[in-house]
Amino acid sequence: MAETITQQQPLTGWDKPELDLSRAEWQSSSQGRGDVQIAFVEGFIAMRNSGRPDSPSLIFTPAEWGAFVSGAREGEFDLT
Image (cartoon, rainbow, N blue to C red; front, side):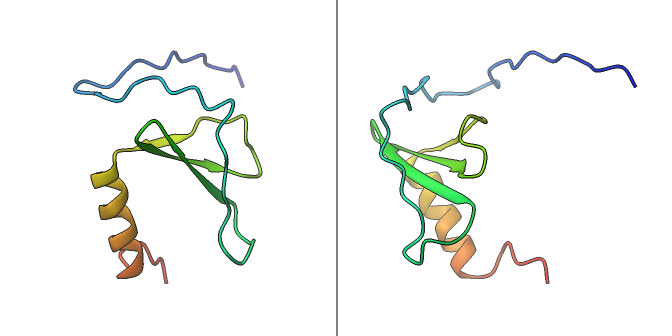
C-alpha cells in the first residue's frame, strides 16, 4: 500500500504559539503509571505520550486544561 504524506497546517483560529518543549520538565501521574506526561510551559499545558516522546504534543490553554480535567474526573471519557 502506498504511503501518503500529509503536511500539518495550523487550524483556523489556532491561537497557540509554537512552544519550545525541548527543556520542558515532563511529569507523570503520582503513581508513576500510564502513558501520559504533562509539562507547564509558558502559561500553557503540554501533554504527550511518554512511550513516544518525539510524537506531537497536545497543547492546552489553562481553561481548556481545566475543562479536560473536570470532564475526566466526571467520567466523561470512560469507554466502559
